[in-house]
Image 1 (cartoon, helix red, strand yellow):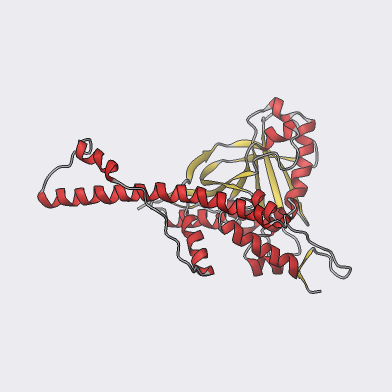
Image 2 (image 1 turned 45 degrees about the vertical axis):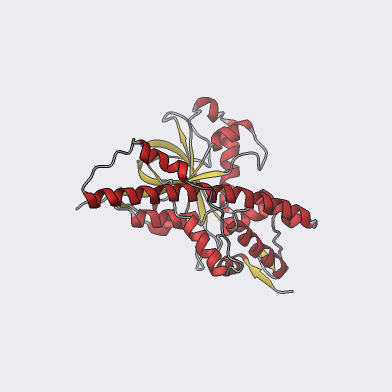
Length: 328
């Protein structure tokens, strides 16, 4: 049987190593180890399964439902899930179509008023009554849709509309850095135990956890690294191997994702690139510190304090790209 290592798999499939590891963590796929190879590898059967997951995700099927589809041989289960999603999408399409039709009617009215040199009263019965003249639109789906069209539709729907601009204040942080296999899990496990031992939540209930690649994954490196920062009181003593650091703060473009949608880093990058008001303020250290970008693990300290089992938390991240105001 032929096997593909994790680096080759990410290139073939266009996924991050973290997404693949997350799919394995939640039981969607399995990796294997061979006697003559040090890294995890994937069989052709697993690669096919990953491709199925990718397509289902582009169809907006939640991971929990994907797991039910792939582990249940009963076709009725998949049918029920697809019908439920179609119903939800139909509702969204109808809502958007209604809004589009109202905007078209308003555009027609505005064009007429501009042509006649009139002012338009948006509170008049004539304008408000436009909504009453609409009929419920019905979605139309072509009989044949290509994979490229699905990719384009997914890309169009992925345009970010909820980017926030956030200033993070200077703070004292407890840092832990590790380079090796599965660095994200390693640093999280080490820091989680220490933060629970010192009762950080009771000391600082608003504490936050940030992480970043250090260094980034690369074909030239056997392993990449990950560093975690936990905001702590200035006077707090922390045990080894944690190190106390001072974070200078900064301005960031921020977008929330659910794990494992790490591909949305690219969407946030595109948002900053296209912004008329902001531009990048990336770290000169580049890939060594993920260019100064941060991942905030939302509610991590709270969940760690409660000792919630794996899968109970919301698995949300805030992606942060450092930005600054554009100047003329």
